[in-house]
Image (tube, rainbow, N blue to C red; front, side):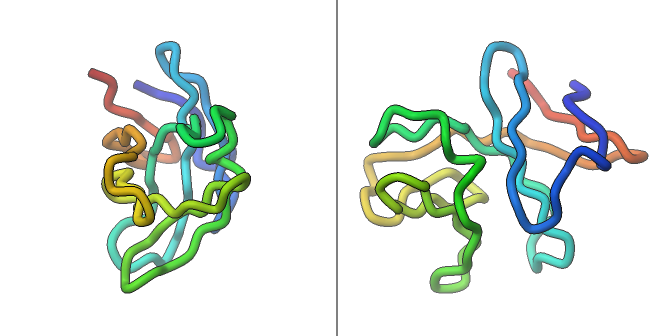
Length: 107
């Protein structure tokens, strides 16, 4: 499903799109070793706020993560797993750039 254009993305940061009733944070990381684009749930389960798209991206022990803005827990971008609380995770979606368009696979 088309969710936005590549020009809507912000390099090395997150933007949020609305897709089939979900707020999805897209992180555009050109030059990242694994992949360029990640799609992860914008809802922070610890604070209850929709803020993940505003989080800072970092690398911890070789894993790309986003730090939740309120309580600073770290979620892996590749699978949504929280590093500090393994029972917490965020939903992730397959995402790709195709011809300047961002496409998200919805189930």
